[in-house]
Amino acid sequence: MSQKGLANALKAVIIGVAVCGLLIYFYFLPVWGRAIIEQAPVYEKCYVPWMVFLWVTALPCYLVLVCGWRISSEIGADRSFSVQNARLLKYISALAAFDSVFLFVGSGVFFVLGLSHGGMMLFCIVVVFAGVTVTVAAAALSHLVYRAAELEEESELTI
Image (cartoon, rainbow, N blue to C red; front, side, top):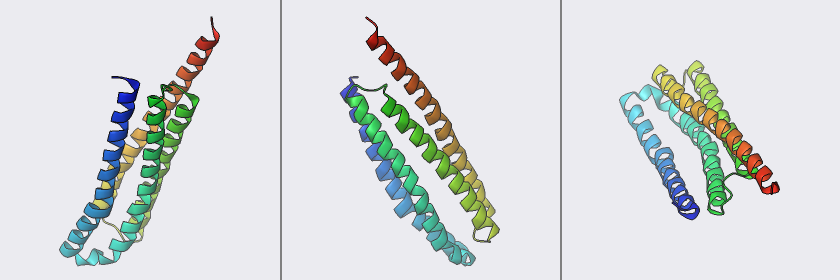
């Protein structure tokens, strides 16, 4: 696959993830929230705070997609191993770490305030684990891309 083809495939995946994220955050989560309220009306007071909280957690996710788009553009321009891509991957790592901590702390606060259920806390822990996995993977990739960019720069200087 060519660099352009790879970049276009990555961009298509990013668009797909963005559309799926919009569906999850703005259709499925509200529908599931209302279904929970129908089953247990005692949680009606939790619906709006949880929806706002979950929508705020979407912001770092979409910033990650923007970074991914920029990385894809760099790949399409045949600059796969660049300091810019290493920085963007480091930024993705920081965003994933922030979102994981924010979700964990926020769900814990909601639980302590009586605005959550233990099952929701367990679900958030699973999502936090996935976020930590993305954090570590992006940090490792950032390091590797940075090292590859350094090696590429050194080899360009060598005759």
